Image (cartoon, rainbow, N blue to C red; front, side):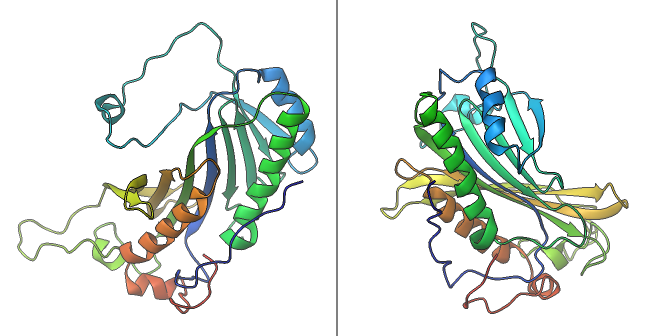
Amino acid sequence: KRQSTVPPRPEHLPDFDGPPVVETVLSVQFKPLSSVRTAHLGLLWEEYRTTFPKSEDRPPLDPVVEQFPESPVARVGLKFQTLEDFPVPRIWFTNDLGSEMIQVQNDRFIKNWRKAGEGVQYPHYDETIRPHFDRDYAIFLAFLEKNQLGAPRVNQCEVTYVNHILAGQGWEHYSDIEKIFTFWRSPDLIPPAPPEDLRVHARFVIPGKDGKPIGRLHVDVQPAVRTSDNRPMYVLHLTARGQVGAGIDFFDIGREWIVTTFKRLTTSSMHNIWRIKNDAGPGKR
């Protein structure tokens, strides 16, 4: 088996003891493996079944690649599909707690961590999230090799952090935007009155070492209600998507952009609630 090659955590990254992260996703996309069929995904489950005993069939995800310059078709989201072959489904393999999940289709391998209860602590990227991805992705690669199904030609990597910022922790009403986010200041003039709530979608280009684009960071903010107790919250969704080289090195770049941007977008009062540690020292977010 291949060993995890997670580099040491950059010391400049902020660190929180109680971050509002409820889900992380590491996804690697590759050119479709034409030999992989639904039956193969069933055989693959046997490789994971001890740890991930539950399975579900899902529709396949469409491929997504950040383009520079961006094509008009990609910008407006047009999609053309041929129906010569019935699409191979996406398979979910989930552990008993529902806290870890693998998703596989013939052009994608995805690993999710999801918070499964209020007492659950976020398992930090360097300690658990990335090493567990590397472990499970190695099993997938070995399965492909053993069954002569081809080797993935990676064309895009994606890192996602989903944060639930709950009311009652530094803010009470959706209009308390400036207590949460640094990018908003309520107008002093009345009218307009304070905003009822906030919805934001922003995109940032991620440059490589040579200054040329290697990906984008997508930031989404939406008001929502937690279904378990009808508690108001803002959902802060950060996705870094891109590619460097032929492997999965973009994961660490995307994670760094997400963590740094999360701190810059949120206020120091919220950082105190999430128990920020030494910004410049070692950390684990």
